[in-house]
Image (cartoon, rainbow, N blue to C red):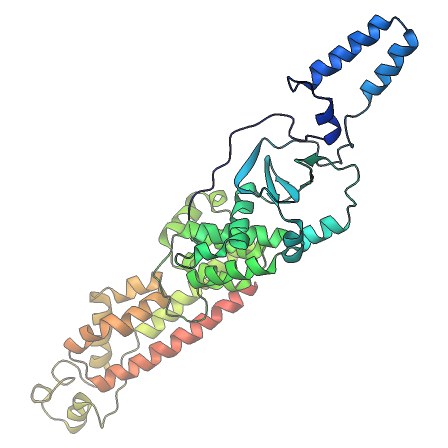
Length: 382
């Protein structure tokens, strides 16, 4: 998406009231015209005449500026300055010439603004009434207009996270459901919350904090779950929290919830991961050999190094420690469960565990994924 550039500053007197324009001379200077009128009055020598002219000069050049519109814009937005537009919207110090009917149709904020104003005593710019939009940043407003006026630009290239957040913030303030739904859909694709497999890999904790805040400010709770877990498993986040609590920028309620979730998930992971496979004796050669009292060395798969009872558990726990699964998984319980299910099974198979035994662990890990992901909802309510 191309960057929107503003035109350079133009004439300081942007509110070109029609009455003022008629008074300008060939130089275009209202002050010069007013000065010549004063000299003509003084030359007449009539005190009454001077007073009369002064009275007219002291009157406003046009309609009085309503409260909130006293600060004139410093620039016009080139990308959204429609020559046939019929309303000027000022955001911060930038003016946009747009279509009043279109804004009213899609924004409850502008609909109410226009409905409650008869355009009396309102300044104009290029013959159009001027309104000031409060509570929205000009950068957000530009992205909002991009989504509202030219949505086709996002067809081939979806908006970035920052752009989607800007659209969402502006849409929330301006009451535009069309662009709000578009922004939420995009952010949910970046921060999915429906599955515990955590697609897309880990995210920076700064982004997760931003999403936590945006989800609350813009009332989109669906975004919080994935962001919440990203903070749970982020080592840099916990380091920052320990060294500079204020730099984190989260309320105490979120920090307490994160601490509780992290501690509970670590405990659950340790108990689960140290539980050895419980294969079926009818399907596991190792268990069959142990039951029959045969020589494990003559059996296949589980038998050479894995026996029933303590030897079986000790071998499994040793594998978990030696391979680093226990320590890595403590920092990222849900993420490492997915790794165990997709990448680590071959390691355990090579260590001598048969498919029947490993299938027992696969079922347990999958069930834990679903259960723990659901538990995050309870922590988010605290």
